[in-house]
Image (cartoon, rainbow, N blue to C red; front, side, top):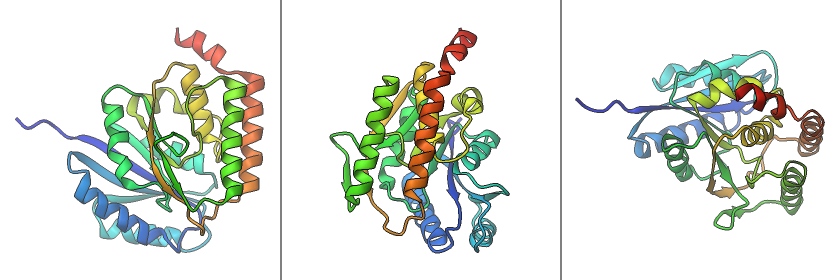
Amino acid sequence: MAKKKKSVEIVIPIYNEEEELETNVLKLRTFLIKNLTLYNWKITIADNASTDGSLDIAKKLAKKFKRVGYFHLDQKGRGRAVKKVWQESHADVSVYMDVDLSTDLRNLEPVVKSLLEGYDIAIGSRLLSQSKVKRRPIKREVLSRGYNILIKLFFQTNFSDAQCGFKAVTRRTVKDLIPLIADNAWFFDSEMLILGEKLGYRIYEQPVLWVDNPGSTVRVLKTVYGDLEGLWRLFLTRPWNKLKHRRD
């Protein structure tokens, strides 16, 4: 009897991304057909309160392609969208990636493979020595490196890049860790990694090729403020102390 393929669900959280949504979902789908043949994969577009034509595009793609689906939330928040779809998924591995596909898709398979070999969380990192970053504005590079240094100083963590929009988790991690994450916006990534490492989850880092998207809709200063606010909340509350006791 043939061994059953492991399942992988790839979530693309979106807010007002009508300009590049269809092009990049089709690009991702083509890549998966050619390169992720060892897995049963699915793409889910997670629309969080878009006000443009993004939801209509998502519906059209889901109707046209069997392994593309969509999920709509009435409230904004990338973290909220990712958490919701991950928690309703039955996949062995749940992934999320940014719609701009800034991270080279060739990094996907090693990330998935790491989770099936024993890791709990896998992330793409732009800050490892083997990583390559292209066309990133100096302002965003400085902010990113400074932010990740703050995380290490505040929390004594080992992972290198909290913010790269290319992450994956096991089904167990979704069940046990994701419900503990309070943030519903951009700090979701950082909170997952800090809390995860403090609670003993094994984190795999994949060096990536990452190409900046000049058309990104991310509002940098607003995101930075939300991230710093989240760091301060975790530093003050240190929720892992109570959670560790509960897990033990």
